[in-house]
Amino acid sequence: MRQSRWDAVVVGSGPNGLAAAIRLARKQRRVLVLEGQERSGGGLQTDFSILPGGRHDHCATVLPLAAASPFFRAIGLTERLSWVHSPAALAHPFDDGSAVLLWQDLERTAGELGADRGRYRALFQPLLERGDALLATLLTPAPGAICFPGFSVPWSALFHFAREGTRSAARLCQQFQTEQARALLAGLAAHSTLPLERVPSAAFALVLALCAHLVGWPLLRGGTVQLTARLIDELAAWGGRLSSGCGVYRLTELPPARAVLLDLVPKNALALVGQRWPRRYRQQLARFRHGPGVFKIDWLLRGEIPWRATACALAATVHLGGTAEEIAAAERAVVNGRIPERPFVILVQPSQFDHSRAMPGVAVAWGYCHVPNGWQGDATEVIERQVERFAPGFRSRILARRAWSPLELEQKNPNLVGGDLAAGWPTLGQLLTRPSWWPWPPYRTPDPALFFCSASTPPGGGVHGLCGYWAARWVDRWLQRLDRVDRLKSM
Image 1: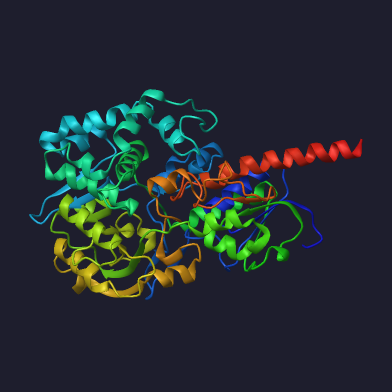
Image 2 (image 1 turned 180 degrees about the horizontal axis):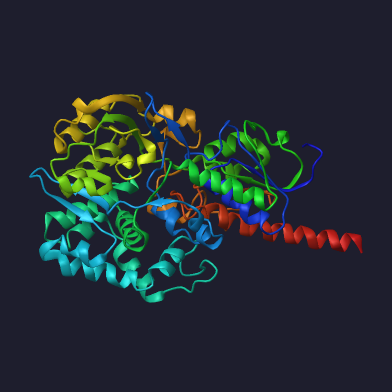
């Protein structure tokens, strides 16, 4: 391997590393992907349960951004995957036994919101008129200045999104009268890990709801590992190579290559590159902030979850947070370094809709709440108490559980620093300067042969592969420049 001459070597085989490699391989570049773990895919892994009878996704299960990803769609990947859709994308229950549902159909969702029906329609109808193009524009390094090939910038929708999204979720919720609408939007915004009083938390609510109305919130039959398998197959079909179990600790350990792409967060990239980058740039990367971590529990259950609001059985994803004020208080406490008594819990029940994940009579589920980055406590009690609040009898159905602390998540995947699933806190400043404010585009580094392609670059976290895709575009430009130099030398 060391004697080979590669056009590009990618360090890390998460969805962005694989996407970058695929994009370069499709350009007839010689590409090698090196993965330190024995299994590829980063967070896109599916494990057998603690007891026989089920399979658990390690991180992501519900994949709206993967289903909507312009890159995955452009290479025909989404059509080759076996998607499973729950009838509703999301359920949000309340203490009185009712629940509000987020449906793919805009009018059906608006109908859940009573007096806020017109307000919800007015918020999302302009976004959905050219929804695919809007999402493709938002998932770029500089929305409005560049767009995914094949799409034109939908200016009116983009302006509407900018007006509504560049505010706090708290301000967005104030536009609505009903508790159902406010709680639905607050739960969507809480995925950001930002306090709901901070901008641009509203943007996360808009993007997640936009995905729900465009493609739903689907999962993959058999587990998220199926996406990893299809990405690896695509890479191999175009001549790229993947080597797992190849830990890289210094750049000198890499085989000769014209370009190196790092599917790493800044902390791990600094450890690998060392002094090769100038001090000023290293200082920028050292200031990169990670957001709250998560404490996750995988459950194996006897039968399905006994929801008080039976409508929760219609959605693969359930938000357990009560009112918008409760959700805001919970997320505020986490950012202030505390664990709330009633955390906002995101729960997924995949085997309710994908029966291949569990044997008959057994259900697979997982739930997590946000905790301070690197937190070393045990949130099992508060998470299960919150589930029990909306599903009395839940605990009596637990056959086995496996809890993941933030540090255990990081040990399994070093890019999850302190349990941060988003590869960096999505504050307004860091959304505009991930992972640094110089050089631009942010995939480049001061070393012209070294590039970032991880979720620490735009457009950020989520399973969409677009951080890798955009990085690969600039890598290909660098390789074209080298090709021209080589041709001039040979003349």
